[in-house]
Length: 340
Image (tube, rainbow, N blue to C red; front, side, top):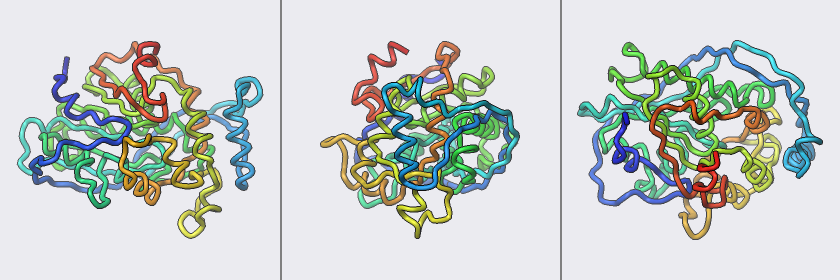
């Protein structure tokens, strides 16, 4: 194995937010934000849907999640291969004192409704969040961290949420970023000569991580950590219906009024919490902070995720999987992972 189990276990957060051990000595670190231009060529699916208002959003979700959806709802009418250029907001952090461990980079891919600065345990900033801070914990352990905003989120490009923000382009962007990070002359690693990359995915990001790893050449990726992961896409129906999505530009016009109407947000904090939290196993301040800082979900990536078949047998590196995610499996991964 390329990575020892102690490393994987020490860096594995659960999908339901839990605290890291308190009293950990904080390591001085150096971080820098980047805007990275990325050129990709990927498949895009042609989707026969249109979102003008909240009635359209509700109807699309109903059609996508009804019991007979496989025969009654077929939004994909074809596919094309398209070259595109996007700007990706990213941050690289490394321990100030360096060391051999710092040459191993944890490449973090967030899930839906989030950006690199706020996955509930990536790098939160709300009062009392230190014990949830995954980035600081990784740095304290001696490893470097690269985190980025997927397109449609944070400081990255926000293209058309139906025709462009789809699953396949997200996979290609991650693969491109992994190559950039491992390049010995990379301008995005603060001079650190990266020796190993460990993918860390959260929720929807875990599926993107798997697809990217499957497509990556041998030697590029050295390990994978999956949180909020089940191995199947069937949980998407629960996630989308439970969120009671509304058009972001209509529900919060002062904040999201400029976005196209295919960007959706949960109707309230309780609908948001259904997608990733289970009482009494989380701090309500975490859910409130996520609700306050959330990014709208592009309906295109939700509708195109199921077009991909994950060939898990193609993965030849160590994989660590959290055992109690929400909402993907209502708290139990083990049976599903064995089955997948």
